[in-house]
Length: 333
Image (cartoon, rainbow, N blue to C red; front, side):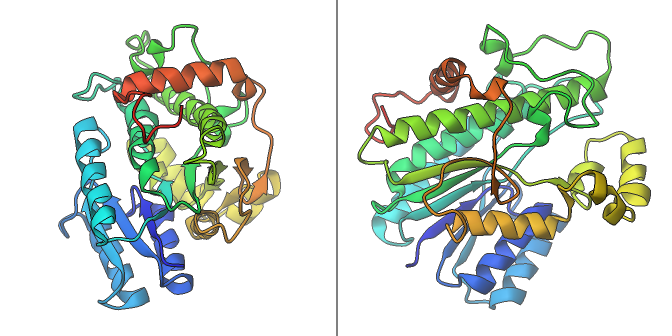
């Protein structure tokens, strides 16, 4: 059955392969592809647009729309327009939301958005949570799926870039508005902010599943958080990263991927990750299943992430950060 699939950061490394797979294998789906810059002056958006034409022709059921996740006003405007398009019949009901976009900054001091939140945390968690919550009422009554992205970085000690283990502070507001860096180690502090955001995304996913299952309007919506693997060819290794990491990506990680994969089975390509995500988004894989996945395998996340009390606290705090009232009829109680 035709449904709408929203993909954020749709011109990203893995996202282009998500789009390609959906166009090839699910041509009935209506794809709403969001990017920060919709013009062809953005080389990645131009590549995305070319991929859409190549894999489905000029008459594809695809729209490319602007969405700036560093602005909650942009998220609100986007969701209002999309919901209206669904009500009018211009788009079919939602089938899935793929929260693919991400941000990290490993080379500069901590950045703050116009909303007053730390930029990595807003883009990775707060804005995506706002997007999902504001669109829950636009899903098909038959259900659908929310695909969130986490990482092995959420688990202390599992990622080689970690210098500061990710933890949840007792004052949750410090997640969105952390103290300034102390020693100027942008790499260590920046990666920690990224890892913490991935831990919070995972914990919020568990809480989201708890809440939707208690509300008959949303009970058929399943949320998953996937660790898509360590992607050897990801642009992430070349954007906002130290020169040494860029060199390693080009001359060590990519050419030696087959050998590195022996030590890390999750080391793979963006294409492989994109196909897995597309299969989860359409429920081609694991229909009706909720929770944490490593690649396409249902998995157990870190002990810290399984604290249900903190999960619920993050759920409530996220409603505050997003400015969404839980009394809204389109938000699960």
